[in-house]
Structures are given as C-alpha cells and as structure tokens.
Length: 368
Image 1 (cartoon, rainbow, N blue to C red):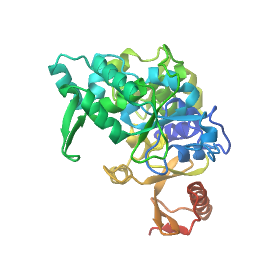
Image 2 (image 1 turned 180 degrees about the vertical axis):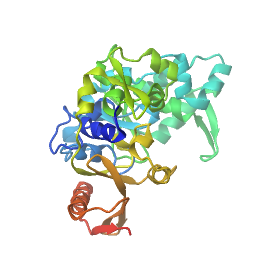
Image 3 (image 1 turned 135 degrees about the horizontal axis):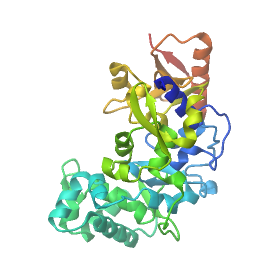
C-alpha cells in the first residue's frame, strides 16, 4: 500500500526538483514537454531543475538547444531541439477517433463534409508549409489559411468577429508542418524548422503514455488519457507491457516496473516556487497533490492560476508575482505555519525568481 505523500515525493524526485545543477540533455521533463504558459513557464521550470537558462529561449546563440512547439492539448511546450522530429511523431494522433477527440467541435463539420480528420490535419499542414517561409505572426497565417481552406475547416469566431480556422486543427497541424514557435512572442510567431520531416519512429522515452507514467505515476488509464486528450480506449491499447499495478491508498494505479523501487524509497527535500503550469501541478489526480477541495479550487481556478509553494515535496501554499513600476514582490499565502528556515527558503526562491526575470526583488509579502 502506497500513501499519497509517497507519490508526491516520487514525483518530486523523478522530476528532479531537488537538484541544484542539470543540463538540457539530462532534464527528464523535456521528454514529455515543458508547458510554456505565462512569464514563469518553461524556462523557469528548467531553472527549478538546476538548468542555467541564461542565453536560452530567444537567444540566437543557443537556438540549437531548445525548441517550442504546439503539441499535447494544443498547448505550447518546450523540448530539446534534437528531439523535434521524433516529438512530432510521438504527439501525433494515434487514429481517426483520437484525432476527432483532440480537435473537439472542429470534427463535426469535417465529418459532415466527408473529410477524415487525419486527412484534414495533413491538408492544413500542407497549406501551412506553403505559406510560412519565414517568421510569421499567427494572425497573418490565419488570414492566409482562411483564404486557402474550404468552409468545413472554418468557423465564425464571436470574440474576433471573423471567420477563421478552428483553433485546435490550426495548432495541431503546425508541428506536422514543421513549424516552431518563436519564444517570447505575443501574439505568437511561427517559423519553419529547416529541413524538417516528421520521424518515422521515436524512442520510448518520448512516448507520452510511458513518459506520463514515469514522471507523473502511478496513474490510471483515465488520467493519462486526460493529459494527452485521447480516448481512454486508445490509451489502453497503447499501455506499456512493463506497466505494473500498485495500490495508492486503496486505488489501483499503474507505473513502469523499473520505477517501483524508486517509488518505495522516494524522499523529497527542498523548497521551490512552482510556476502555475509546472509539470508537477499538471498531474490529473489533483487530490493526490491537494486533498482539501477548497485549497484545490484556489490552486487550479478556471482563470488566473497562482503558483505553488512546494516544501519537501508537499504543496504548502500559493504565490503570485506582483510588479508595479520598478517594484517586484512575491505575494505568498501559506497553507500552514512555516518555520523560520522554511520562510527563509521561500524568500531565497523569490530572489532566484526575481533574478530569473531580470529585476530586483522588493520583498516577499506574507498573507496572514
């Protein structure tokens, strides 16, 4: 029988949140992709895992290290650039049914028109390749696609007061077209990856099912399916042969057999200010991380997520950045009494965050 705290400690350990030094090559979360949402996104997640990110991101001198792609759930994720072709293969829909689910309401008009969804994604990707020959803002590419694609691919967008492609086919087709996101651009800018072709196969470490079990296990079929945005039956059909059952407080879950010993002996030590979309917080079994429903609602609101204060593998509170002119503060809402050394560790992490953002820390505002 495994307790939830042991699961949290395993994830802390396997996601390398306790280490002080690391490289792009040896950072495990890059196998599944590091979501890049908000100012404290992918690069901050790498900093938390010991990677020196100075010169990464948009810095041209290190453009060969990382690549940003729209992948799982249509979200922007950061990967090793050397993995880009294999990642494109690994995140592709597994079947027509899977593709239909991943693009949500965009599938119905395509099906009504007799257009298979996988064919539609290839068609959009083909137009994207033809259109984008140099860095291009998303809005311009959307306009060009609107002119090129027939009606079943498009919808009326009330917020834009315009007709354009459905969003999910747009995003999921970009990586098939060999387009990467230029980091630190808003609105998004896409550009072609020179000589790119989708790989014919990919290593096990990039398989989203295996990577989820390794980094966010133990897990159920449903949790993995929710993360990938795939039907549960598709995930079950691709369930690793070396996945074994473990009991987590009475619930049957699975993890890779090679990781069982690490789960049983997992320990967690250290304090981190996790960004709102850090992989540690992306697990679909949220009650394993935060048992109290009210606290879970505060950590994962519909809009405006805060970050999490992680102390020795457990969520001990919330934090938010506050910037006003030249002042940068970190507002912290503890969920329990933090001892003096724990508070000092939080303040030290706030200093690291400020340095990461390139500003001076004015202070830490403690709630309560």
